[in-house]
Length: 132
Image 1 (tube, one colour):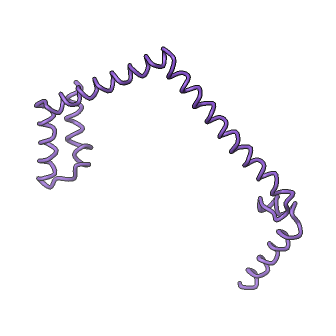
Image 2 (image 1 turned 90 degrees about the horizontal axis):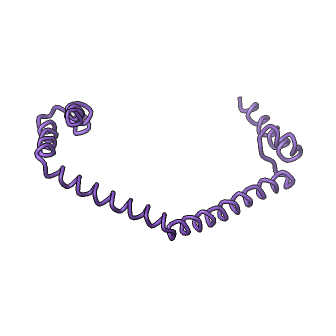
Image 3 (image 1 turned 180 degrees about the horizontal axis):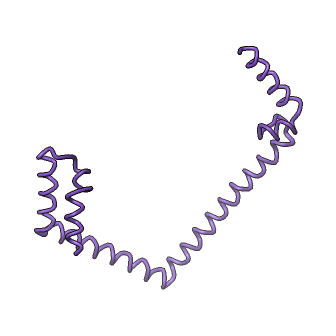
């Protein structure tokens, strides 16, 4: 068993060190710089393209946000966020929300299961009832 392992390691190193084409074919790497250099070039080009495209994208985004359409979009998003916040606050003050939270608290207190179980069972049914 050990002899097979030693022979395998020796064969690997012979292929790796003295047969770079075979090494690339079977192991996808080699110690020959002829095969390593193109990989480095590809990585460098990919990084260069990524940096350039990030700069281009950022300038396009900034240009759009400075335009009238961009300002309108930002304002719409801000208004929607404010409206959503008010809606959530109003709901949390409602009797339905209190009933829902109390149901969850009692479910866990009774030892029936965890809050996760509640949201997968009774809580899910409660939420479905609100939708109707």
